[in-house]
Image 1 (cartoon, each protein chain N blue to C red):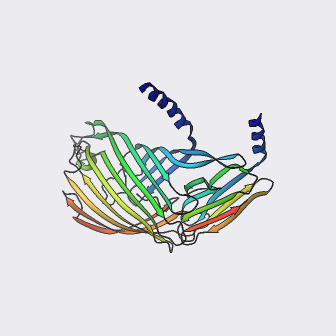
Image 2: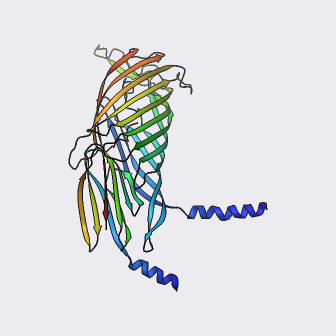
Image 3: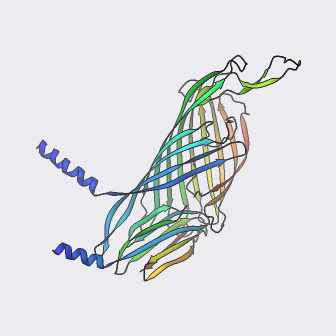
Length: 104
Length: 315
């Protein structure tokens, strides 16, 4: 009974989230994304990379690290249904690297 | 006591397997390389198994952490020409089709902060079966046909290291060892035909000799360097190609050539067309043993344009 209750609470506390990293221009070597320190995207920068899943309702930290050449650019996409639908930002690397952290 | 140990092992094995899950995905794979005189195309699916661990990130929500990646790539290589005698042949050129099975294991230690570091090891096996026709008497009516199997084995290591900061140097050491056992058709020669009814003598181009096989070993080392500034990377590379005697398995007892290249790659900022590389390199090739149709020392330059490949894809 106690287990069932816990499960219900955790289901209520979760929200859907989609994170995308997409190459735009220049040489993009590697894409990484972390949610609360857990690596969810780890791929080369040749194509669009997507992570979809549930995240807690409480504050969540999303960190993105991108390695490439000079000031190549990439698009970071965030989709939190009913809160921030399909938001995207284009970033330029500085000296072949970029990292950003977003709190949701 | 021994029984207890055995039972413990049986209990441990399924736990080890169950504690790690794998995520599976299929992607298309295409690699085409062409030059003025030759070219190859490799195409097929790419199967990726991502080792994942389920980690709780709060409120009882668990997400899958990406771990090591195991990649399986069964592809088919088709040559765009059958001319195998260029000094600067496209790497891995084969005059006939090859079925390729590549297995790759990637370990990526990158965390949320700190250094970015990854390594991958790839093993590749290639196989192709070819029908060769030749005319030993120089007449079309006397045709011989033989079927021969070619194969190659390749091992490759690609590393990548950077500080994970703006303006920091990126390096990727790459090592490749390739053994090939390739059957090739003999060169066509002009054969004088008998005088025809009008008194005209003509010639035909025919393959007179049977196909031959030569073993080859090609170690290569390259260091990809991005200095952390500007839109250019550098790739000094050395190849040492060994070729054995016809019909043997030993690649060390005939011809060998050492080739040095020093690539400079420029990455143009073309919107909606990322990962384009334009490269140029001088080359210097010296014959260190045996004989071939080229000068002992050959030199010149090469240019290349690559689409959809990153800094890491070179050897």
